[in-house]
Image (cartoon, rainbow, N blue to C red; front, side):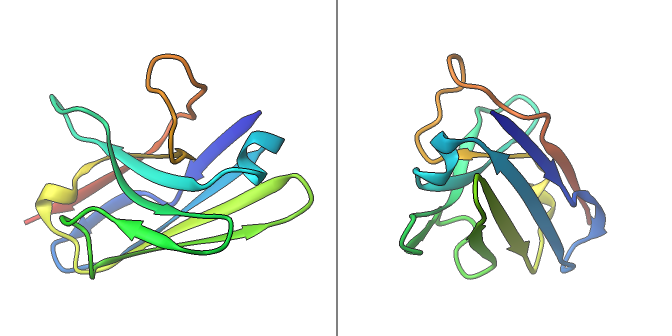
Length: 118
């Protein structure tokens, strides 16, 4: 089992970033996947998810600005998050995982930092 997130960085408000995640392991190829974020002092929240069939769901705070997509190879899921019209409140560490991942009991990657300046 491995989760590797990348693509974060510093961007001005209104800018765009594309996050990528390589999730290796059968649990990921057989599950719906999601992108989560955790801002300083706040709880980790699910912001976007995608089922194996490609159905997507978004938190109200990112709807219309973020787009999640996925591609499955033999034993790896590549999950992307296109983030447009970024706002300072999008600043957080972003993680990918299954859409039902438990913060305490499930494996998590290191995440990727997104910082949006005003």
